[in-house]
Length: 88
Image (cartoon, rainbow, N blue to C red; front, side, top):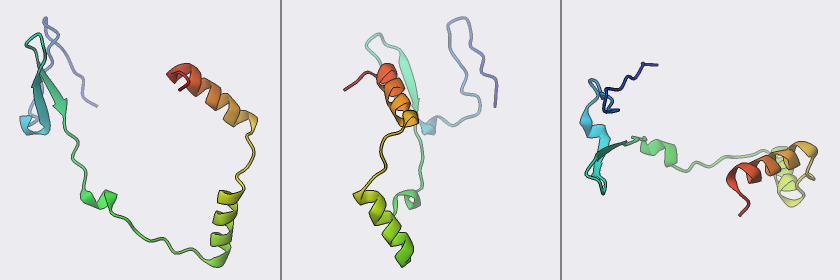
């Protein structure tokens, strides 16, 4: 991990990174904002078929049709999430 330093105007250097990987925008105050673009291979989003044997298929269907009851850990996690992000 590289150390990032800023100058007296709170600017950071992009170093030798090509500017092609950033979207450049100008805000209402005239500042230029560089937003990094994330390049993802299309292979990540391709669908694939998973073939299950009979036992795995039955276990999968059972989990979908009768999910387990909430336990204390799930309830605690839900309350923590709602407190942090606000209940919708």
